[in-house]
Structures are given as structure tokens and as C-alpha cells.
Length: 145
Image (cartoon, rainbow, N blue to C red):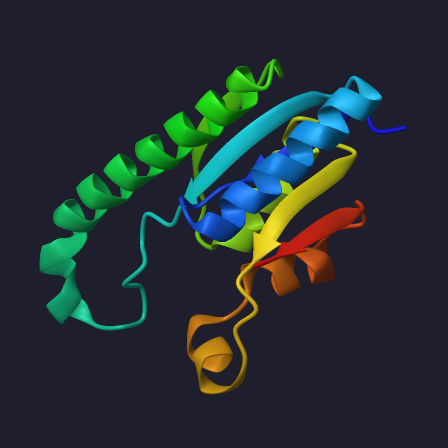
């Protein structure tokens, strides 16, 4: 049924739960898997020039975090006997990176975690999962923590 599964990861325990679900689906359907981490290279856009000084430090930390999350996801997939392609992607917003990556690799399913934020926390931090659901026509399996 599914031939190519895209799994966005962010290094969180919720993303790890999504990886575990994707492993089961990949095994059940014999699907290919691509795991991605999306970095927003300009997170301070619109905030003001006072934050520009930290751009290099931010990108360095974000890249290190991305590499660690991708390494952990790859280890989980390969440890379960599932082959996985991995990529760190830059996009202005995480949801755009996920949607564009799904189109690029021709995925037919996105498996991703949702942190289940609500109230002010959701308003301030937003919801990548909610935005992906709103902007893709692909099926999305949402794994909650």
C-alpha cells in the first residue's frame, strides 16, 4: 500500500515514537524510508537586527542537533533491519521543508510526531504537524506523545 515513507525527526522522544511506527509500517509494506531534519536557516527574520549576531552560532548548533537526530533515527531504522535514506534540509519553516521533501522524494506517506501542545504554548511555538496537515495532500500518520 505505501511504497515510500517520509519521517521528519527533531531529536525529541515524540519523533522517536514516530520512527518506531514508521519501522513497523516499512516492514509491513516493504516500503522505502527517508528520514529528514529541517533547519530554518533564518529563524530571526522579522525579529530585528539585534539577533543577527547569533546567526552563525545558531546554524552551528542547529546543524549539530540535526546531525545527532538523524544519526539516532538512522541507527533505529538500521537496528530494526530497515534501510533508510537520511537528509538535513534547510527551509524557511519546518512544515515547508517537510512538505517539499515529501514531494521531492515522492513519498506517499508522512509519519511524524506531534507534541500535543495547547493554549499559549501552541500559539507561541506553533504546530509543525498542523501546518503539514494543512498543506499536503498526502496521508499523514500523526504519532502523539
